[in-house]
Image: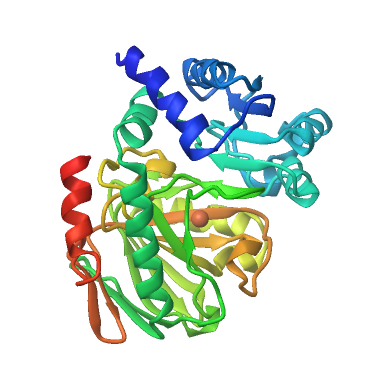
Length: 343
Ligand SMILES: [Fe+2]
């Protein structure tokens, strides 16, 4: 495999994305569901920069969010994550919304990036072989366009047709641009929380639903009324999702937490949610826990699920932004051409 490129990609992650400086402490968390070689390579890259890495390996947990607490070494993990300068998470069962995550975020010291389940192929393709400055610029422009839009409509050929309103006082987040302590996701997505009760229509999910499923074999149809899932239909996977959502006995698990554009030119639908939610022209709908950074109304729930919809057509106040999965807005056209050429 691309071992030479693995180190180059790891070095780029530590230096250019996480902006690690010498003597900083870097915790790399991973679990038994992830590729340990990637953790080691990132540790080597941190060492090359004069930083002090620590690799933490634990058992993969069968769930995520608050529900995973009972599987975690909570005290040890909380102590590590609350005290380190940089936290790079490769955990397949990601720690976001767990107690150690909450404790670390409340201390407010750490620069944390979530790279759940990253294997060699993913880090090389998604970080090593991308022009980071160009992708940040595309994200900034998409965020600017979206911030200026009040009413949005998203449709797909498979039957998605949903409308909602944006709150101009809420941020549209450019993911992955690390700037001081805080929580970061990999670049290649732009996300925000629309006014929850304004979201109405139908979402036909045809990509990935994680948790509890992964890549879908047949689409799942979600009816959304005033921001809440009111009906789930489809095949056996629709039943799995509904049963899982109901198992928490938490109404908030049915609430729409965020909308996301996927905009990474090298992302492929793979079953790994971190990559799938960045697929070019995909829209990801999040339900359940809503990160504080969105400045929405929901707050934390028992867990969180992401549902990936492919090949969207997106209108902002009647103007086309995305057409059949391609960014066509005038303000990004040229940049898209360059980014694809460089990728
Ligand atoms: Fe999400």
